Image 1 (cartoon, rainbow, N blue to C red):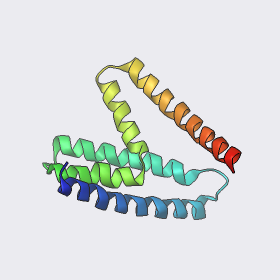
Image 2 (spheres, rainbow, N blue to C red; image 1 turned 180 degrees about the vertical axis):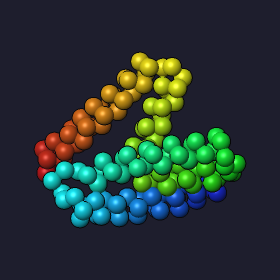
Image 3 (cartoon, helix red, strand yellow; image 1 turned 30 degrees about the vertical axis):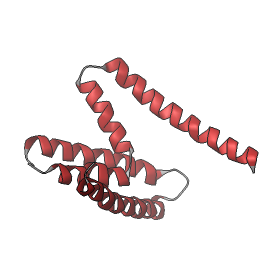
Image 4 (cartoon, one colour; image 1 turned 45 degrees about the horizontal axis):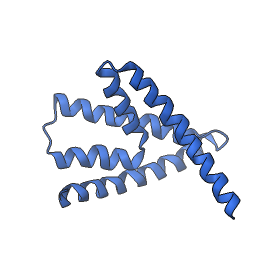
Length: 127
């Protein structure tokens, strides 16, 4: 584990987290808070951004591993982990693993929501 890679993730993560916060606040002001527009916009734009980065790495940009990690794991990961979920799903689909991709998508959403609900109930029962 390289200290340079860890620093790249940390710096990119900070940038992505601040961007997430600002987009969330801006979306709330523009569209209101009755629907989670901010999260939807963040997830969609983050997925688009990581896709653009991966496409550029493959076709146009010859960047170091540190720069790639900074942009994808750092910035995109700090902005939204949904972008990584989308990329993992794409790789499964691209390899022709349709059943695995469907299982991954369903399990990720269902288990994540179930874990959140379980945690809330657990904390409420202890408090």
